[in-house]
Length: 282
Image 1 (spheres, rainbow, N blue to C red):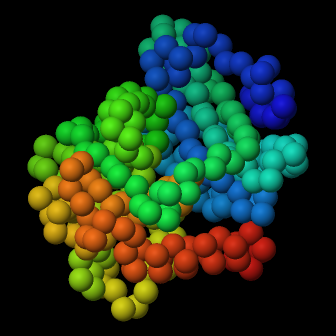
Image 2 (tube, rainbow, N blue to C red):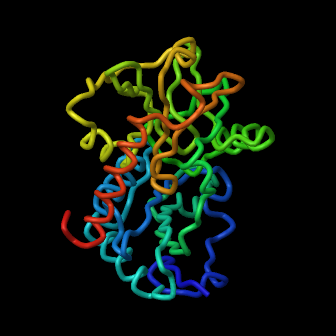
C-alpha cells in the first residue's frame, strides 16, 4: 500500500479523498504535475513545482503553499514509500470547494501521490514507436490543468491503432506536441522543436542542454507536411523519457527504425539521469 499526502496529512492511498464539491471534480478546474525518481531522488523537483505554480497562475488558481513547502512535502512523501525501487510522483492542486460551484475561493487542496514507477514497452525504445496526429488544440497549452478531455479523447484514438501517442495539429497545420509529450524532429544536421504554444517539458529542457554540438538547433514550428521529410523524430516526457518515433499515421519516418542521432541523445540522457541519481548533478 502506498502513502499519499492530502491536505496536510499522510494517508494510505485507499483513504485519499477530496470533497465531491471541489471544483476539480465539478469543473475540471485544477492543476497537476508529474515527475519520476532516479535512485529515489525526485528529478528536477524544483522545476516541476515551478511549472505547477505557472500552471496555476495561468488559469487563475491561487496556491497557498510555497515552492519550498511543496518540495519538502514531496521529499517526505517519497521517504514514506521506501518499498518502491523507483517512483512516479503526481502533484495535484485542486480548485477547492466553491460557494457557487464555479468561482474559486482560494481553498484548494494539495495532494502528492507517490506510486511505483510504471515500466513501458521495451520495443518503443529498441524498435521505435508509432504515433498518430489529431486535429486539436489545447486550451491554455502552457498550463498542465486537470481538464484533460482533449488528451483522453486523442489517446483513445491512438490506442485503437496501437500507437503510443497522439500529436496535436493546430488550425495552421503545425505539429505542436503530444498529449503528454514534446516533439523533436531531425533533418540533416538540424534538430527542430516548437518554440511556443506548448507545455514546456522538463525532459525537453534537459534534452535541449544535451544536444551535440554537431547539430544545429532550430526552435521553430513543424508543419504537418514536413513530417514525411524528416530523417528522425522522437518524443520526450518525464514518464517516457526519450522515445524514437518510426511511424506517424501511415507514414514511415526515415528508415523505419531509431536513428543514430536519436540513439545518441538517448544515451546522453541515460548517462545524465544516472549522474543525477548519484548526486553528481544538482
